Length: 118
Image (cartoon, rainbow, N blue to C red):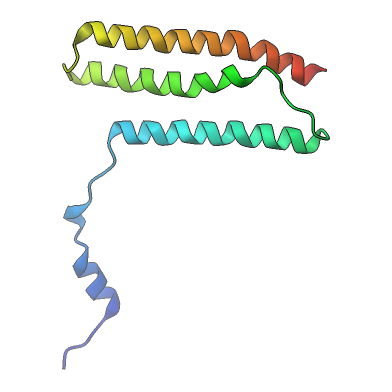
């Protein structure tokens, strides 16, 4: 009879050559998700530890992670030479990302400072 080693038989079923790392877009989306989770945890903890106070006017801050993530993906595609869609599309996307970042900061930061200050 053969020696049935469960550890060895599991290793033989999953050879290391089948490993495919996640794409750059998926990794960027994961970092964006981490940023959103941290933002939500801050809001929930602020509400818990201040007796139920909220942070009015801070919703535009949620534009920042998605704007940055999309800009990073587009810049990566430009540097990699991915020519799908053309240069005009890339420029429009980067302008929209910059606008989202600007408006998110311009509308959200003053409201956050006002809510935290008083």
